[in-house]
Image 1 (cartoon, helix red, strand yellow):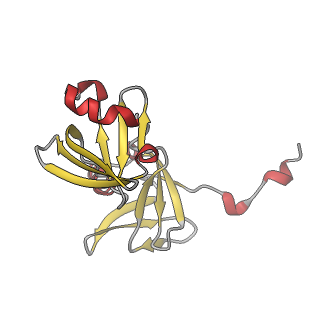
Image 2 (spheres, rainbow, N blue to C red):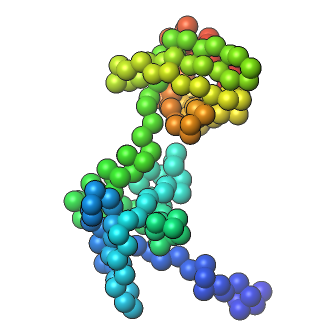
Image 3 (tube, rainbow, N blue to C red):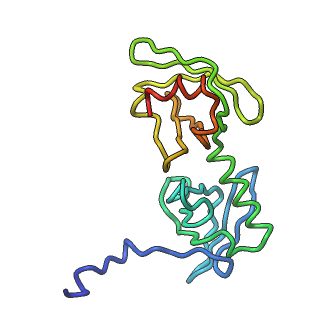
Length: 174
């Protein structure tokens, strides 16, 4: 195969690491400066996990305010401890998902299901799902992620750890 055909300079991935990138907070938002042929500062950047369930702190896309990829962090452990903590804090904020430990109520009406559940923090939450079968996704054998009508994610870390009443309410959808 001719290598000339597969070269695409627009598809080059910029690897971001401690040598070429510095992250900082500006006006309460994550920002960064990238050193290269010239130094470029992005006043607001967003982090996106490329593998959100398997690799929580590896292969993190960094996007600018126009949602265009600036570069890729292969592993946030490549940065100093302060920067690593800042990046983890931002990822935790973006990917916050309450962990459900029990399901108190689950009712279906007109293609929607209405849930009442208790989280690991002890809070009672209520949320709505449209097309329940499509929005409960199993991750492996024992874990599932539930996405509500507003795009919020809820996690059940272990289906086996649910009490019998909770499991009976959800088993039809698994």
